[in-house]
Length: 133
Image (tube, rainbow, N blue to C red):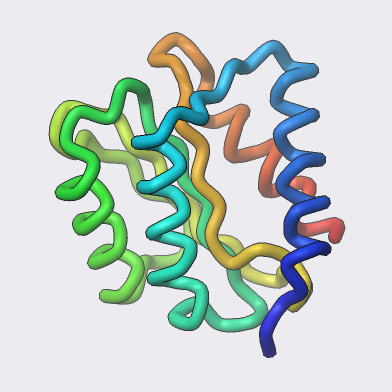
């Protein structure tokens, strides 16, 4: 089942507002928008309706194309349930797979943040919002 982009936009803006209230600064430069948008397009049909994948990457993204390729391959190869942490091309990456989400939520959400920001908090705030949608 496809989700409605208007609903997903509302959910994404709500998550961004929660992160801003928690004083977490996200990055939205061209590199970030290209990387996150590309992963959303590439993986939207790969992830089952009841699941979502959220990820947090430290800024600046040093090798965006290679980082995106590794993330995409990880999800396509069947990301295990739960969370994974690793360093990809000099960036800390946390990726979390969620189950039990409603069909209208975004399937892939990515957040690029400053190294001092708490990636666990970012993913937890996003997860809480996605699971209650």
